[in-house]
Every structure is written in C-alpha cells, then in structure tokens.
Image (cartoon, rainbow, N blue to C red):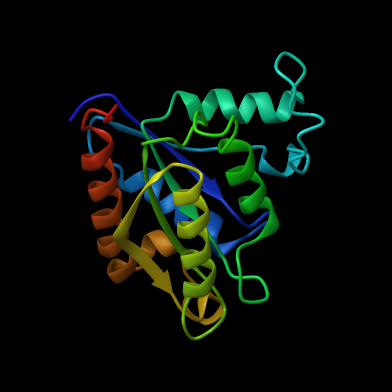
Length: 188
C-alpha cells in the first residue's frame, strides 16, 4: 500500500473533544504508506445553500474543504451523538461533499464512520445516520468498519484514547480496513 490519502472529519468542535482525540489516535495508527489527515475548518464552512454554491463563487471555506476532499482516497468520519443524531457540522460537510449531485467529492470513495459519545451505546444512532447520509452523498460506506465507544466521559476522563489498548486495536483495524479499500481502484 502506498500513497493512500485519508481525510478525517471530526463532528465535534469542542476543545478537548473525545472524538477529536480519537481522530488524533487514528493519525498515529495509520499504516505505512497511508497519510491520514484531520481536516481543520469544518466550523468555517457556511450551512449548505444552493444560492451560494455557484461555480467560481463558492465560499472560500467550502472550496478549501472540497479541494482537500477531492484529493482524498477515502474518508474517516468521527461522530459524537447530539440529541440522538449526527452533529450539524458533520452533516453540513456531507451536504457540501454531495454536490454537484452525482459528482461530489464522496462519490465512489470508501468511507468509515466511528466515534464515541457519553451515552451507553457510544453514539451508534448518530453514526448510523452519518452512514446513511454519506451513502446517499455517493460514498462507498464500509458498513462493517465500525467503532462506537460508550461512556466517553468516564472512559477517557484520565487517559487519551491513544493510551487505551482496546480502543487502539479496534481503531487500527478500522483504519487498515479503510486504507485497504481506499487503495483499490475506484469503480467507474
């Protein structure tokens, strides 16, 4: 495997976010030949609106996101759960990635969705919603590449996810599965 680029999108903007920490752990766990980068700037992208999504006039933050996503071979999304569903910032990124319809930056690229949340199920509802939205946006969602870490506030109260052996083993498996899928030629 060589020169595989995976772009990570973190659905929590909170400083000290456990999902952000999980993404940082994933960067460290990327296999040789895989560049896993956390996209910075989701909070700067305006809410999707066709009136401002005009070729040559897109908002700079949205254009920056689309350019970074266009260079990626795959995507790793980190979703907490807000009120039982996907955070708005992550859904907004998926909306921008979906356009133009049928030609968006997610089309035919592998996507894995993982995360952690305060609740006892680790955010599975939000992650399922993110899988649904990313698939409708054209992504090749890896349905069996999952990691939902429950009770994040307790589990990561005194340690970073990268110091949790159980989590790093499971996260490394997801990253490898995604990297393997991303290294395959995209079907036309």
